[in-house]
Length: 351
Image (cartoon, rainbow, N blue to C red; front, side):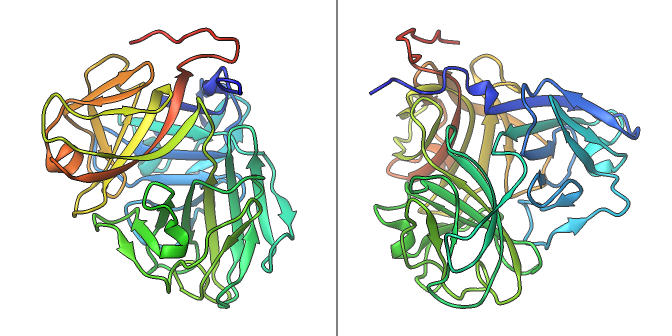
């Protein structure tokens, strides 16, 4: 089996930092591809996380730090277009305020969505089977056992779902790292919340397949007539990893093997109430990695010791209960800067 099929991960995921200028048609470049999912967060001041994708359309935003329904800018003063090497912004203060610094995390899916009729619910899907990422929109029918096509061709390792039209439903986050059968067991986290892992088979009760994601009648994922977006990920060797680790309570912390040098890591403690931490290789281009944002909060960027990005994973250097408590359980999602070893056997270099 090849070490990886993705020798250059920056063609599928990339972080780009920029500074707002409050001018219309502010163009952000350097992504290396035309992004299909753009997640923006202000670093230097309090601001919400802004998520735009090609399937819902530019100017339609969801916020990971709230349960709010999708907001549509009309006229569009937010993210205005997905461009060949980045994206273009309007004048909205949440995404382009003068002198405010921002981080943007960018993923490549499959471009313009296509209709998928694999399931009992027809979905619109933009899928990239090479990198294992798809963006899906669908309209709920309120029927337990309903399902929709995800376009990945393999069983997803992680699924994130948010209602677009209902402003009271939490972000649903399910990962294979939560248990051996997280969907069938009803295991989930809320991306907009500090809550520990919940278990409720009224929310999830069946494992996805290589083509379908199954739903209950829960309004979190399938209220009749409500609209939803789903971000689905398949784990790809040398590019993405959705795993778990146990903390050791030491500043000589747990080492987590990913099989690549990370570019982006999110972690969440699952057995206690804590925030979702976000780190990346552009805000911290060298070790220690210490500049963090919280996916569930609008807080400005903070600085504190976290750990190191290594050639084949990451190493915790904290002993905080939120990231490395002795015996604490944690899940993570990570994307690569470079594979530990390329498809031709060339090893990556450490930072």
